Image 1 (tube, rainbow, N blue to C red):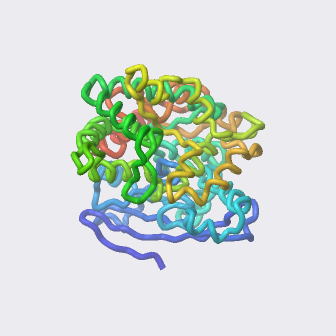
Image 2: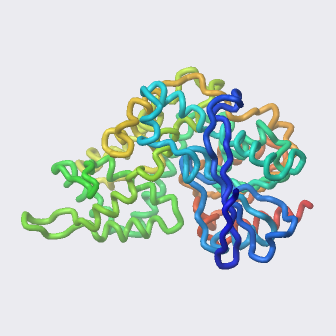
Length: 437
């Protein structure tokens, strides 16, 4: 039986759905998918339309709201919301180093993880829709970042389930390979570095000093894992968030302390770095990050650690060279590198699994371009001009290729706008939809 509880201004009902691991074999192995229904207090008996929230990631559980916070403040005026923990995340059947060890060999674990991409997530959603709403009732979807990628997969596989779709920072390139993604991403990350250093010029020297120190000393984070120069550079992931540059600066302010042997990196700083670079809470983000771009029609060679290979084309991210020449040391962005699986304790048991997934060449296509060319589902998408994670031009190319996608292109917000804008972004998209109805 579903569990129901009350929060200030909301009523929450927990649902657990058994779903096939492989939807092509519905009678085969079953896993569980968890979803939380949220409705405004006092409206729980109303016949409200449903909105399915598709979280960013991959590998991120759905939000755990307290009352009508963030975008729910707007959504709950119009909808009954379903917060989906995509398979492998949150309270759904987990997929991490602990649970995957039960699957057997690295090859068996890798084969299992091939069922955790957007195509399987969408098929889970369709099964849940039919069980909750009935066969003929459609719902609205709201996809943030990777959730927007899932939205285009949904419109490719089962558009009959979707009444309308909202997308924030997540229109994918339909014919964009992993190499294409990173080749476009590194210049955007470099631009974010330049903007940060212009805002906080003192950080140029601080970052250079930290990089030089790490190159000469063995430093470990509080969890015992090594902090290398390249791992330190991963703090650039912060630069794609609205307040990320400021948070990075405050973290760098705490870098140094005078110890018994002279200046050393402070425990405060090292714990802040650990919190940013550890992927213990979302290992699927690392293992499946490049496979979310893999489609057999784009490449017959797999992703092959595309972020690492493409990085070699952008010498400005070489910290050793920058330190030697006196140039700013650039931090990296939303990239997953093979060496992460040797440094992060949560990932190290999955190194061989990740290699096998990087080598896989027969990934099914995620987007049906012919079907999308005849799309009839209205889609309202926020595209962020300076988005560090999802390329603006790739998004707009998709909008031109798929009928009934309307875009709002804005430089007012960064990629995390849905979460931090107190519902303003969703309000704008709803206004676009109301204008067409």
